[in-house]
Amino acid sequence: MKIISVPGINGLGKTIGCEEAFDYIFEEFEKIHSTENGKPFDRDLLNIEKVLINYDNLDLSNKNIYEKAFESFEEKVLFVGGDHSISYSLTRAFFDKCQNSGKEPCLIVFDAHPDCMEPMQEPTHEEWLRKLVEDGFPAKNILLVGVRNIWKDELIFLKENGIRSINLNRFLGNIEDICDSIMEFANDKELYLSIDIDVIDPVFAPGTGHKEVGGLTSRQFIYLIQRIKKMKNLRAVDLVEINPEKDIDNLTVKLGAKIIVELI
Image (cartoon, rainbow, N blue to C red; front, side, top):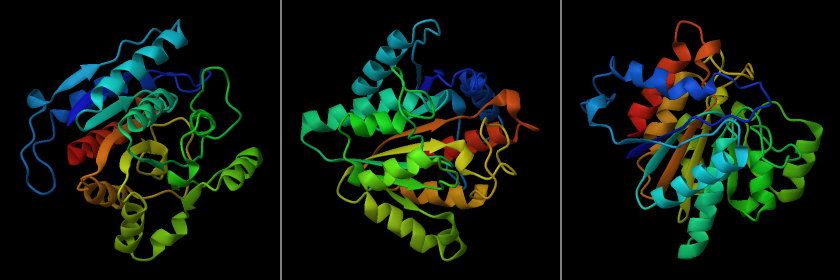
């Protein structure tokens, strides 16, 4: 799996620090020697690229993200942010790629928030998903997992567009059954997985901008990605909103590094 660092931020000043996430994660890779199933890991063997970001020109940055993503979908790819605003250009490129090839796209989003506020000209980390839907991405092929704090306007938008979600209370039951449901949703479609680290409870991942209590445990989430990564139709993943400046004892960076290693 190719790894592409996308240090873009557009969180109206709230996500400053996320642009440094990959540098911290890369250092943490030095301490990881294998996956949990015993596959050796060596960071020096990683295929890593980086998108050029111009923090004074959002249009140019989004163009660079889109073009880099569009050309990268020929192989399985992992994008590391940055905040969730980068996911608009990434998923738009994915949508266009699927349309060009006559394939059906599917998007599963792990996030504490739906990110469906009224979009600005350049979507921020709070609006990217709504803009994507308004651009034509099929809402019926979007699944939200872990959402637990939703604005009124977002509730209306989600209901009007029939966007499905999985309530976290379901994880109090059999997590294997929940994972089966998530994987079944993406069956026979081209799958893009978007991961906002705040889907995980801040006890395990404090280094993020919008902490929401009552999230998944790190163990639950690692199990989910270990299962989902086996899906042959998984084409791309992004991991966003890790903020080293807000972290405690490097816990979130460590978790981010582990998630990446388990995915690749």
